Length: 208
Image (tube, rainbow, N blue to C red; front, side):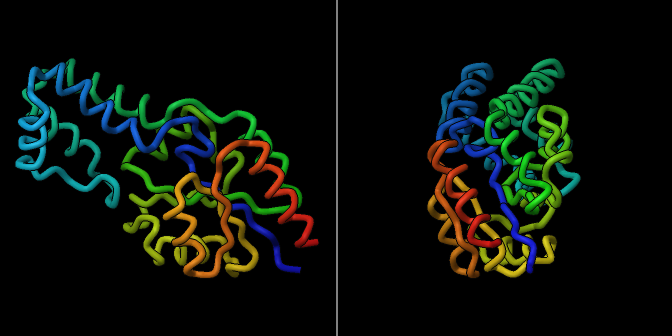
C-alpha cells in the first residue's frame, strides 16, 4: 500500500496568525515609527527595489538593510523591525494541531508546504521545532515558487515521493486548496482544529 501523507500549511494552520491582516498591521506600526504617511512609506519601499524574500534564499540580510535605509531607521530600529516582523509572522503555535500531527508519524507521512520568507525555516524551527514532526518542509523561498502555482505542489510531491491521490493538503486559504486540486491533491480548508482532525482521521481510515 502507498504511504499516505498529510501536507500542512503553516500560517493560519500550524501557527495561530491571521494571514490576511498581520502584514498590513505590521506596515502600519512601522509607518508610525518612521514618522511617515503610509503612501510615502509605500513609495520608499517600492523605490528601494528590495529583494523578493518570499521566493529567494540568502536575501534576508539585504532586505532588512535596504528597508532600514529606505525608512531611515537606525541600527537599533533595524533590529527591532526584523524582530517585530518575525513575531507577527509566526504568531503562536497551534499546539493542539501540532501535537496531533506528531501522533500521525507511525501511520502517515507528515510534511509542510508553505509560502514563506527567507529566514522562516530558522525562526519557526527555533520557536516550534517543526523538523522533529514534519519532513520534508517545503518553503516557497527555497522552492522559488509559491502556492497556488501548480509547480509548488508538484515540487512538494517530488519531495514526498508521493502520488497526488496519497496526499491530503490542509490550508486556510481557498485559493491554495484550489491550487492543490488542480494537480490532483485533495484538500481541506482549515477553520478549526476539531474539523481538521476529523478530516485527517477520515482520510487515513480510507487509506487502510
